[in-house]
Length: 201
Image 1: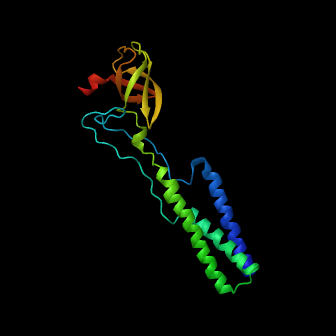
Image 2 (image 1 turned 60 degrees about the vertical axis):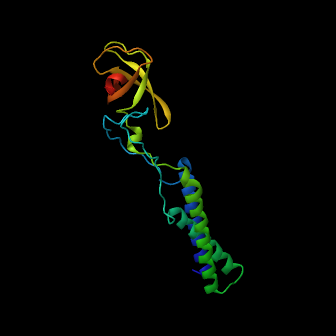
């Protein structure tokens, strides 16, 4: 295997991995820097969906990404291989000089990709935390009246999205449309609620 073949293999491998990374991460902007795990219960005193006394403000989630990551390594390999191949195959540059220039080109390519990820894509990414998807303690509004011992419907905001769910009163009482409630627990997809004024007291 010649030196030109080695550079060509590096280029093909790096370019292919970059392409695969882009295609598969296109569903999610880039590789797994955003995730969501299972929920954990929040303390009853911490209500979400409306401001209230005693609740500490939540800082927005933020993602962190190292300047060295798979995307930059793939870019380095592609630029290194492509530059080395061109210099050895078409320009007949001395092999040590070609190696040095290929390494510099590889670092330049990796730096461009890393800068793009860290400065352009990453600032728009957030980590989805467990607490963002916990229903217990969420303030909601009755959208469809809750019948005595029956089920109605509530609407609420979660992670910036308007959602609805089936609901019934904790003690089985009826509740009219438009009342503000707090989700006390969730069982089998049904939210058990209590009137906001009773919960706050």
